[in-house]
Length: 242
Image 1: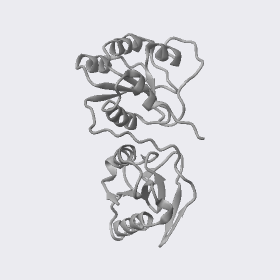
Image 2: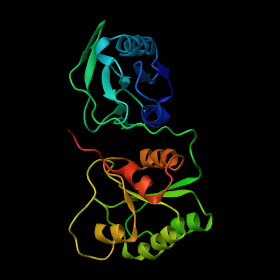
Image 3: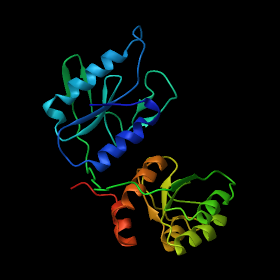
């Protein structure tokens, strides 16, 4: 069992799931509570221990928060504080009720990257309406190891960002695009300049169903093991259900 502060719980959980091979269950929890609250810290720790000891948790990396059991890769901090601050857009896998653990769903397609270290710096840039490309150009000038861009929708950017993205890729700085929605596929059939097809032609790597902060961590790990741009791209390809 791993305890951590809630501020970076989703990043800690994602990294543990990504970097550690299958083995004993790992359960992450945080969210300290006052003793007089509805779900105090002691109860949360007991719930996590109970889940870690359950046979149904074998080989899984899970997060337990407010009695709910989540896939480690799916959790997000939804609110800044209070009950329900940790959740997952895909829902929970099960619940712990007293000494009973009910895991109704199993997380699919776990990916393991045997990275000996995390490569830094990798910058995360979020696009906003009308935003210029200064942050991106600063990252290029600093010769960072990689760049993650949170795009509009399923992979769209302002047209004036294209030259800087092209420059980054020409300088062998990997550029990974995610949706700023944090959930959903990448790809569309829009024909305007700056849409998905333009990014694909430039050689941008797409990371569907990943938030920006998670894609940044994944890129930091992937850069430590990928020996070529093709290998790096393959690590970001979403595996399909069998």
